Length: 151
Image 1: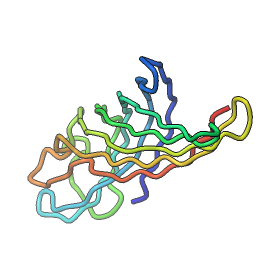
Image 2: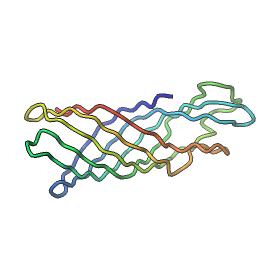
Image 3: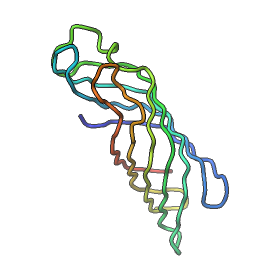
């Protein structure tokens, strides 16, 4: 399944090149496995918050900005749906309500104007908790690549 996500971001300067970034978003991802003797694939919709430390590096002319990110991402399951296979029970009964992931990554931004930047963001979410209540190992370990437009 293609990982989809939308988020609102706030960045709070702490000191010099160090800042705190928090994000609140909605994500969709999925996992598959054998549950109750049937092979199924579940899609998992979650509201997530990311709490990140951010360290910025600038080049000499100030047009490029590289940042390293690290932190945690707790999530709340909004719904779970069966996308393939059959499951005789409600799929929400097979997935946990709360999840947690560690986050590492970075972004590269190019300044287009006085307050406009365009860039790319790459992150690895490392699942800390299992999403499944069954014996299936389903941790939210996802690589995310996204576009950034700041205006």
